[in-house]
Length: 302
Image (cartoon, rainbow, N blue to C red):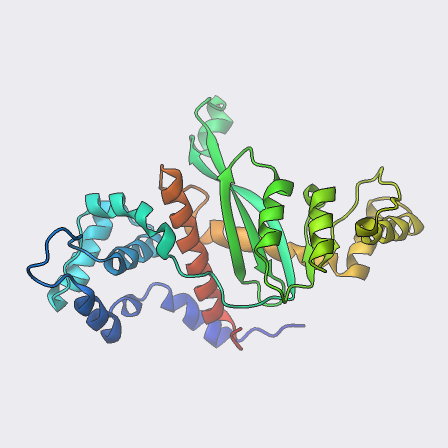
């Protein structure tokens, strides 16, 4: 059983609210060096680095754009670093799409995939409970790939709420590293295209077949046939599927659900952005911070 280092875990929770992370002397020196030289016209007055740091602050402390500008001014301007206004910050968030760092440099052997919704428009649950739901309720869907051993988010795709899990699962599968040998997902990924691509990439697929599943002759469906045989031999009911999950390791798929729970508990279930490109940047930054804070809280790191 995993033993938690409570002293380090508590220190990591305290560190999340520390401003010293953003006031690192090396970071301040880098931001000053990256500022636009005097006399150069036609280029943005503020670098993307300053914009990115301010967005990290906004996401970390769940600030409004105006409050983020005020905090950044009080922190950076005494050190000679100019910060953009909230209008510039809001406008330039969409320009960061091609400048975001990778979520992880890991090459995971086992990947867990799943999806969940984040609210864009709509009232809270209390109003819905008392007065009923309105028509102006909309969500976007986030598709995550999580490293089974470290619980780290290694990939993320944001789509409209109506997107098919199986279709986006193909994109996640295409983006997996060559080191990936196993992928786990729920029943939404039990489609022939997903299993065929995994077979071509020599990746084992562990997805529970439906209750009415039958044996197939195709080579890329042999792993599915094995799952059907095991579940039928164990009784073919819900208890049999749970036993199959424990025997095959499918029970570890719950870790991707924990990753979604961590994102929503840390940063909320609602996105502050309204443009889709900005939503993608916002959720990517949240995933990066989630990975960082998870690393701080892990006694042995990754």
